[in-house]
Image (tube, rainbow, N blue to C red; front, side, top):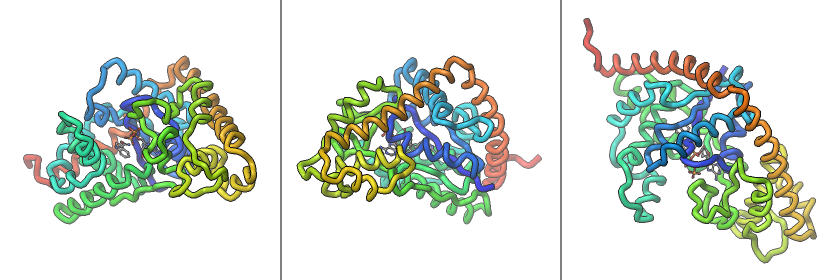
Length: 330
Ligand code: ATP
Ligand code: LTN
């Protein structure tokens, strides 16, 4: 069975972009692949966090993994810090990453370009840690949204570099980016991706948003004057984004189908259908989320996931350290 690994960094509440771009694929793939899905809490602290909020977000992230359908009987779900080899291999990967490579990573470059002050060293070296997260498990595929593709490509380069230098250590993984929904845009500004760091809070639908609030966000989504439900991300980015959301939430319904249904109809009617689909999905997820919190399933899932993950990760770390010559042969 081929293996798959991915993670989410809950620096805030999970949103519809995370669900459509990443989480729903973890769920879809858990039967077909040996799945490792983790919560990247080391990555969270690359930017300042309020301790209580972070801890709540981590709990909610696991609860949402389970509520969205990840099943501890079929997938290994774990917290990054429960597997210490991530930090250890992360340091080793950092020592094999060139500063030129880190300088080219768009996430860091964007933050620099925005003039953000006091960016941490951890944020700068984060792609090396992400490479370790992946390479510890020799996955075949890494399902991610569009924004993370560059990091998986760096991971591939690092794997090849180390394999060449020390002999075969790592499988070289492939990023898996879906054709539809890999970049859900902000509802209030469709030129930006839907993101937890949305300051206005109008463009981002959180999975735990109150349904009325979520509906309102969809109904006030920025569109255009074409009065035509047509898939054209370049000229009609707002409408095309809503179409991607609707398609992703209705079993990847083809865009042509959606265009046909709404031909000659107003944007109001179209938005109502999108809002219905979003609210139905949120309602389903939120009901399960409540059950998960009440059931104690979180601790059980995390301890089982960590036990399995540690087995793989410890063996890989030992192999790497030995290949590099970091051990004393006694
Ligand atoms: P954010 O910008 O909201 O902080 P992020 O990409 O930095 O998000 P994560 O929350 O860890 O960090 O993202 C988890 C997964 O969700 C990744 O695979 C990422 O590519 C995907 N993802 C994030 N935002 C979107 C989006 N707007 N559309 C599609 N996929 C997304
Ligand atoms: N960097 C990712 C989260 C992440 C991840 C990973 C994703 C950390 N380690 C390993 C896939 C594989 C993000 O910010 N979305």
